[in-house]
Every structure is written in structure tokens, then in C-alpha cells.
Length: 197
Image (cartoon, rainbow, N blue to C red; front, top):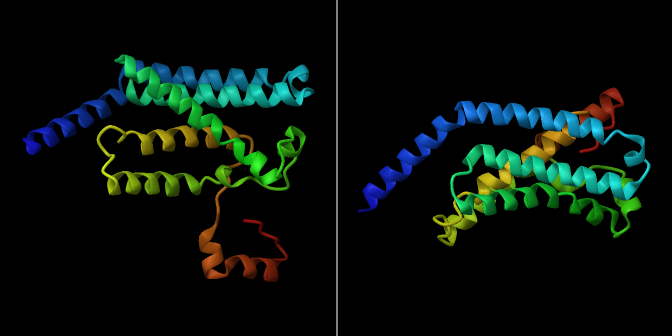
């Protein structure tokens, strides 16, 4: 019986992968790109930029919609429970910004918007680490059946946030290899380059 379930599961995965390249998926992806372009242009209006609260809430709402839309493309909205998953994906894409307040050490929006460096959850290296850790924990506690999508959802939601944040510059990566090899110190000493990772 388990073998039949595994084969059915693998067949479902293969079918889902083929749907990733469907016409509806491609159109949804193009729509998502257009949405991001238009939303980022709208967020540049001076009345939004001059009001910290409006700017922060608008930016966070766009992150949430982007996370929801990205996950909807991945799963394809076929049943009622899919809408719950999509809502959770939007929440995960938005909740990352809470780390601004943790780094600021304050609930002040002004402090959260004027940080000296990027907060921890805005480091793109954290995404695969957290997703893989979550997958391991789920297997350890045998939660893999009903919540097997969660590590992938987290990966997609957080990646959508990071890609959108990283478009003006580049996604922020923690260079653990630089620490391990001493490259950071060498670059600082030899070339006078201060690398803050």
C-alpha cells in the first residue's frame, strides 16, 4: 500500500512540474512581473515616499501580494484549501520585515527604516538554511505529510521578498566562506577594502 502511495505522490509531483510550464503559469508569471514593475513605480510617488507609515505599509503589502502570487503560480489554485496556503505564503513574505524592528531594538518605525546594515532575515543565505532546517525538523517529528509544502512555501515567499528588495542593488549574501578562509581579513589588509558581512 505504501508503494502505491509513493508512486501516486511521485506522479502528482511530475504532473505539478509539467503544469509549471503551462500557458496559465507563463501568463501568471508575466502578470507578476508587470505587477512588480507597476507597484514599484507607484511606490515612488512623492506622497508615499514622504510618509514613512504609508511607504512601509505599501511596501509590505506589495511583498505580501508578491508572495501570495508566487505561491499561487507554484501550486495552481485548484481547491479551497489552496487559498489558505496562498494567504500563509503572503504572510511569510511580509513577516520578514519584523527583523527591522529587532535590529533597531525599538518599535519605532523611524529607527526601523534607518538601520546601519541589513537585518538577519534579509540575508539571502538564511533562506536555504531555514528551509532545510524546517524540512529536517518536520521529518524528525514526522510532520511531513500534511505540512510537506511548508519549507517550499517559506523558500518561495522569502525568495520573492529578497528578489524584489535586491533588484535596485543585489541580494545580500552572508559570506561564511570569507570568514572561514580569512579572505575578509586579507581583502581588508591588502586592498584597504572593508567588507561588512
